[in-house]
Image 1 (cartoon, protein in one colour):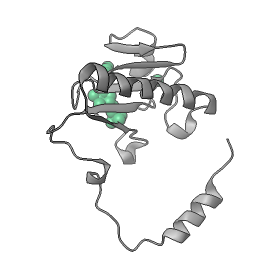
Image 2 (image 1 turned 45 degrees about the vertical axis):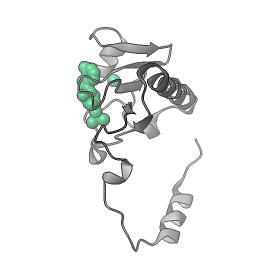
Image 3 (image 1 turned 180 degrees about the vertical axis):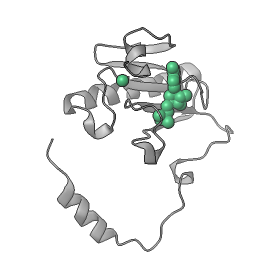
Image 4 (image 1 turned 90 degrees about the vertical axis):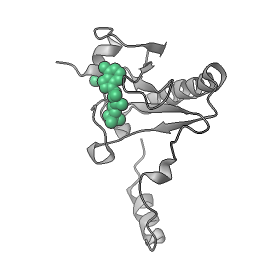
Length: 139
Ligand code: AMP
Ligand code: ZN
């Protein structure tokens, strides 16, 4: 059985679709954190951000960018958070890559990314940066 987001993309499961093209579909989250909370989803089934083919990165982020503007202009949002829960350790529950676009409104009680975890003082930043530089692979 295909995953629920594949089934939404195939229009086998109903959703409040707000944007669609040949590679991307976006629909309202059924458990919205704010009005307009939208999931921006590649139609192809990939689980992790790093699984997404490079040629789909632009279309996915481009759709999110247009929806961020719509959240401001059509819903009156003052800002948005764009979040990927990438992997179970990061809180991913649905194993099909999705960008959460959460419109933000003054006084909505939410905070920023920096409320997810406390700041870690004393990390060896040069060593961590070296590992990442060495570990990054060409696409
Ligand atoms: P996560 O995998 O933790 O990043 O979040 C998955 C999100 O998908 C949750 O916010 C759910 O509310 C949402 N969700 C799960 N099933 C559906 C569905 N059928 N339609 C819309 N949103 C869904
Ligand atoms: Zn899927």
